[in-house]
Length: 317
Image (tube, rainbow, N blue to C red; front, side, top):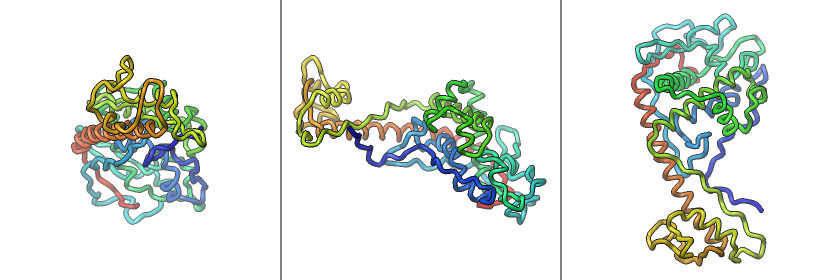
């Protein structure tokens, strides 16, 4: 039997189609091959919390503020939209945080989401990466630095689990092939993303619950027929609002009690309509919790990023 999809839910799986032809250049990489990095960035900015990168339904949290940004006075990249191979180590931007200055090169920005070979133009040049790449790298590295300071580091098993949760496989070679990256780079990014998720779980006070699953669709012609299956489903969501020993509601107040007032429920029987009503309440509660988790995480991230400054060599989009 099929399942009803959650209304408004968004998939956290990156697209399986990734542009990677040599003649596509950096713009194709920006639009398609960055999906893996964007998946990781979504974790960083808390657009979803299960994060594997589960969907946050009913609302979207705005991006945490960027570190304070300024334009460099002069740069080897000034006036350029493409670079040659001997310019790949030119500085695309720098960021200052916690008393240290870190350079981000063109090469690093490209290899954060692809490979040099995959984005090289036919004439041997490379499209200049977007300035957003510098901000993304700075955000990620600042969070990883904080995780290291707190000794919150993901293990290899946790990195593999993160890959399975977000990309559907923990085969780094397969992921690398799909996203035109090296297996080592994919492994590094999965390790980083898993560490950021672990940091998030350690600093957010509100703990997310499990995402409720919708009830099974009834067989045709049995839409209004009570069943033990639906009773078990409903009671499984009710928690302490239901007294199984007394085979009735444990109290008269509660979100589920209010929503299911017009439905007859027992330990042995409930209808699909009652199950759907219970699911709606459970999902609403889940979404509200996810919003609070996201709010707390975004506040934490912003407090860190507000202490950083960034200087860019280009504003190429």
